[in-house]
Length: 297
Image (cartoon, rainbow, N blue to C red; front, top):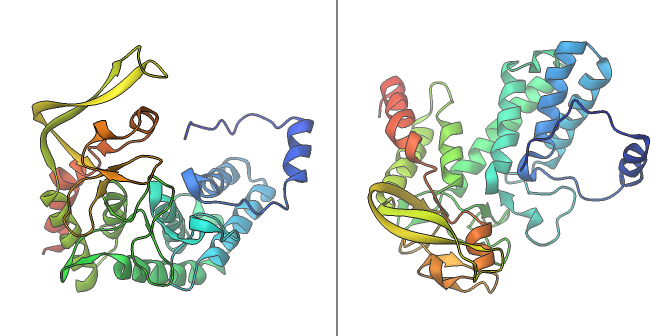
């Protein structure tokens, strides 16, 4: 997810390539694709008043409205529903990026005040369905609400597997963005409050105190580096994947076999994917306490 420079002009060859690929079923919301373009188009329309930009943004919003599934969620790709592309996708905040756009359209915020007013009730309805989907997919473990998986089955709403190393699990990463979105809802219902409190309590309960992850030089490894877990009493981390029944962190490489430690999976995945992080830190230290002050428990 490197930054894209939208101030550059397309060459004739690039334009021709893009137009020739227009019919491909590869439209996606993965890694901010589509949502970032819509955000850029509305802000650029504000600066330039070029109606073509506004129209393109509206086309993008209409695409997102069409892509919302019956459960109220968004798959990683649409209309491509092959494999895991059809799952409700919280992975890397994909669905939440869409929810933010629906929120901006609904509230005429962040340069979205210029878009066609007919989109407002549609975006509001999509947000209601989206929030309902979020509440319904929050995982119930032995009768207790916990958090979310990076992707959920659009029919059963249960945690689902994506790539070989992304097994059904509870996420110490994706759950954070979902809670942050829910906390922006004014006058939250008791259901929304319960969802936020349960997820925060779960994130608090699965924190791992006393380790940090170091990236080190290691000539014996394919790319000359490795990632190792070392003791550090001052460091608190979370795992990306937690077991659905035990809440124990696990690590999976391309063989899809869950392991208890990062050291047990292949180097390529160890250095190529974020299995540990401090994603919930700010939510727990600052954002959630502020929300409780505003809306109470």
